[in-house]
Length: 419
Image (cartoon, rainbow, N blue to C red):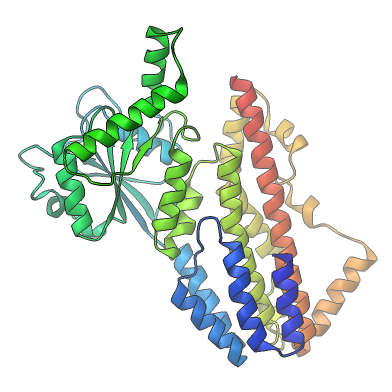
């Protein structure tokens, strides 16, 4: 990304906007190669076209449109299954809640979902998980199920089973497909299956073989009831980073509309280094966009002074990153309790909890940079664009890297404590 910012500034300096437009597309492709980005293809083409014409205000407007769409995106997830399949546990796990915490979906051995029930994410109110009953009851027959639950409002459907999928599941999947919506088969409680197999066959037990048997059984079951090319994801609601859940994450990210990918990434619990890196990747894209926007805006005289990345905005940026990685004040208190330590002790070996230590710089060089920033901002132009772009990029990147590092550190300490 450093290369892309440098290229942007170099081309702006040379007024080479045509080359800049091409470079933006190639750098964005590299940036989003793993799971896709948050810019829809048609919007990226429009931004590139505006860059090619040197219309920097239109570029700013285009980037802001993308960022606003991502930040305001709503996500509605339907989770369908019979009683005892693990729907509620799956929903709670995705919301980062224990079964006994306030607002958790009911979990029990009897049917707890007789109607569609919404559960908002505790940190992201625009994200709602819907606990839906299985089909086959008088109220929820396969023929009228989608209309009854209001299928049009859902972004995708997860059909859960803890054993074999039914003919009603197959019929429902076909009807979902006909509406143009996505659906995914999730085989839950595979950890229970492994435990039982190891308990009953300790000498011949092989984890990989048992998982393959479960997968083959589900695939054959679904093909037998009329699903030609089923996609099966094996999961444990108590260990989301294991089995097929990481693959399910990436599949959903690839198939979601671009503007909804960021919110889905942010709600995922940071339960592994891979999930932390996935979040960092999406936030790096946002940093890249913010830096390009800051550079374009800085051409306008006084714009950086009025809309620059100042201390209050920097502090808010760090708070957001902490929240995204589960390191907000409330979460830190919970982590301290899990580790059997104090918040003060955690502050002693992490860096993201002390904002001023990250931004304080009383050196002569820092004061000179600040004076130069103000001077250049008055007139705008190329040098102002270069300074503001680099400032926005490097400060945000610094915050993001520190928070991600601290998230991994606390994750490993928590894992070692429980092991």
